[in-house]
Length: 373
Ligand code: SF4
Image 1 (cartoon, helix red, strand yellow):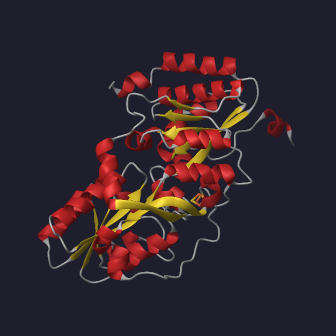
Image 2 (cartoon, protein in one colour; image 1 turned 90 degrees about the vertical axis):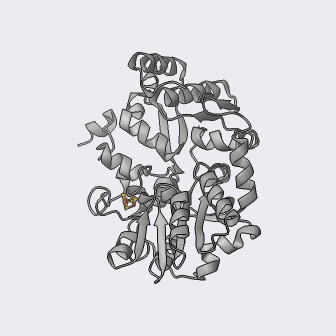
Image 3 (tube, rainbow, N blue to C red; image 1 turned 180 degrees about the vertical axis):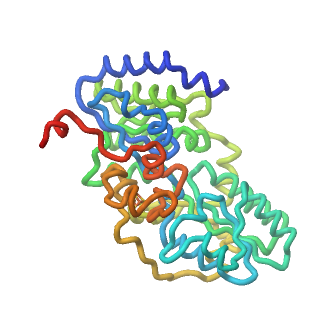
């Protein structure tokens, strides 16, 4: 494992950019799946350094952004109840629900706590046996193993005042849903390297074959991303559609067997709604029947809440790569990181937050648009 600086080397980046420019002969659109990759691309200006005929489409791989409104409202409802300690990673506290967020619940007297690990929440449960402690389990395949291990430990230690509100999602069904959409413009994918470090790459060849789309497993530093793009362009130019691993320092085809083992014990796949996108079959995880006693939705009976989405937020289109964030009329005006209307402006991995943070406030003027008027 190398240090980060070595994956930000400007001379090597220039060589990769030159290689990409030499090999591209026509326009191509590719999607970086993960919001962490989107932030790296925007932060380092990678999209602006690429040849004009390569478009990077920002994908739905921000777990905070795709957590459905109904689940946020369930979190708000549970966190508001007396006798509940509601624990969450910090980035969920400002995600807007139908009429408030977890910060508002906290300021109204709810016991909402930011934790850095689900095991911290389990410890709180052990220390406060007269309270119901709930952990908000949100994320992709990357965070799921730690949450599965916490459920395993809670059961093993017989901690009965602990439960999980689970809204985990899986990447491969999302790729399939994107490819099946009639408005899909994606011709290649940069798959999320950290997801593949857990899950491996064995789920991807069938997708590449079925949809004839190159899938390149890609890391997060500038050189990682440029190498992923270089390989994707090379496949597209040759008419190939294979799975390639451009992140071998972290990803093995079989993934992480220990993590996979605990995932299979605690979770089973289920249909899951993605905020702004809709329900994607088999795209989530829920607790298995053996862990039903640790399911907060079951324990607190919060089914059937009425929800109300923001009328102006276009995060669903952002998450599907149909518009760029600054094409939303509320971007930077009614919607900012201080006054977010949608989760894509809240999260560290949200595309709207990336465009705001790195001052991508308008569509760059091309020669054609510059000459108008
Ligand atoms: S800028 Fe705000 S309102 Fe517009 S899509 Fe993004 S989060 Fe939604």
